[in-house]
Length: 194
Image (cartoon, rainbow, N blue to C red):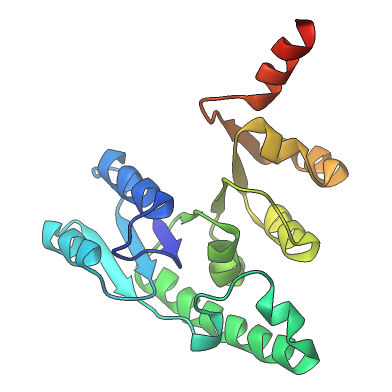
């Protein structure tokens, strides 16, 4: 299993916690884990010391690191072309890693992670499981990831149903819901009965 995480570092947070939980709970007799991250960290060093997880630092081009909120889209045509070329090159690099590590499954914990490895997965014909825990916000990139992923898990049903209802209906067979603990729709329904 390949885990691609563009946010994995020593600051912790939800993504790192999720990745560490997966690594702790997965059956190591059946699955070998390779994690690709963008930088060295103490957490990565600790994982390496355990010895049963392959840790690879494959830093995406600077232009793809820590850029949020559609910065690349707002840069104009030249900026978008440069970003697209950077993404393509990085995907070819990851395709080599996927082949070398004999990866059978790719797990992405965010839309950004999917964008960093989606083409590589297609080139190597590996399935991608995508976990969407937040709100979708870019119609083009959201649709690209939703159509490209083999399996999709939404954190909570509200994330699944809010946007792109026609697309969601067409890919519903590959979607699962991970309960978030508090289902806001159930609370709203209970309030309306009062």
